[in-house]
Amino acid sequence: MPIPILMPALSPTMEEGNLSKWLVKEGDNVASGDLIAEIETDKATMEVEAVDEGVMGKILIPAGTEGVKVNETIALILEEGEDASALEGAASSAPHPAPPKEAIVKAAPTPIKGTEIAAPVSVISDKTIKASPLARRLAAQSGLDLNALSGTGPNGRIIKRDIEAAAKGAVGLPSSETATAEIIPFAPAQAPQDLGIQPGTYDEMPMDAMRKTVARRMTQSKQQVPHFPLTVDCNMDQLLALRKDLNARATQDEGSFKISVNDFVIRAAALALKKVPDVNVSYAGDKRLLHHHADIAVAVALDGGLITPIIWQADTKGLREISEDMKDKAARAKSRKLMPEEYQGGTFSISNLGMYGIKEFTAIINQPHGAILAVGAGEQRPVVKDGALSIATVMTCTLSLDHRVVDGALGAEWLQVFKSYIEDPVTMLL
Image 1 (cartoon, helix red, strand yellow):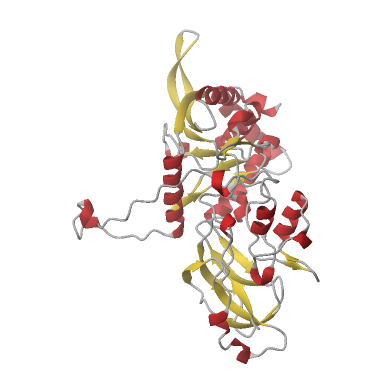
Image 2 (image 1 turned 45 degrees about the vertical axis):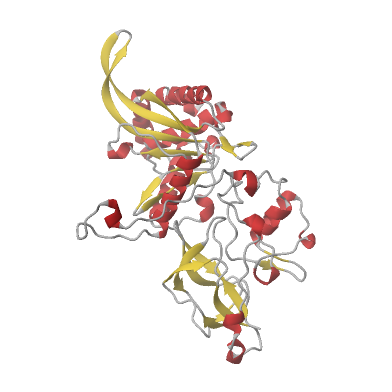
């Protein structure tokens, strides 16, 4: 019987994607691990590998098709000894397995680093167990015996959701019942004339997948999370002087580099989270998740939306390493080449609009993070120092807190530590 190729879930919350390109054609020989298609999600374009070998018998979903549901059969592979006659009726009878109830969550819980996504394609098989590489890794981390599990993936393969279901509570992930509050649905779309907008005075622009995702997640965050903003001004004069000195040394060092103000902000935020760890938390219903590392998600603007590549364990990285990591991920984000594990998860967010001349703003919390820092432009302002008026370069930063897990006094303590690093940046190097 022909083997179905199913639309993969490239992230825990993915419901559909666009099949942008086939890399093979009908009649081609396919081996396990071969790249066969490109799938476009709201955030990235991913290459799909074959998990079985045979001959590409029939492509059911043509390239360029949008809105293909997860687990929908997109193609059929002929096994050894089968010919085209085996395809008759196979498409209509191909399985369309649905994820189990416990895998359907209203909002994704906090991922653990390295376990953020369901492996889209690669599957390792032996004589007795069929399991994805991610499932094998998670099982090893959780101490689970794969022989005792049954798979819900294609052809009975064990995948991430099977491990999570078996290890619920053992790996520190909240259950779907306690992960988030009930999501209030969107208001139904209204016709332009119902909004008082006259025909012929506008152009309609359909919302693409990224814009829809941003709209949904931001609405959910404002509905569910009691935002509590705190604002502080930071004197940047010493930071700018140190940055200039470090970048001047770059040409004398092995390899060139250029550290940005944002790199200092990431480093300062990560160190402040280590000093005030109760801000490095996530809300999980009846519990708080206190994270071991400061995994900083940094907002990057894209055409039609934004994405938040993550600097993993930023508290353990120096300025140069943060700078190189951020430049690489920002460049790949803009070309939509990030892997899901590079932008899903994290523990804290930074949104910097200083480069646009924005003096001050309040950002919306990126769930499941407990806080987000909005960074404004550094600009020269009059300040009073030692009783005398002077000029300093000042940057205004606003910390938005999830008041369910972080109180105002705690957020103020974090901001004071962050401010101390920005105003005395040499201490970041110690």
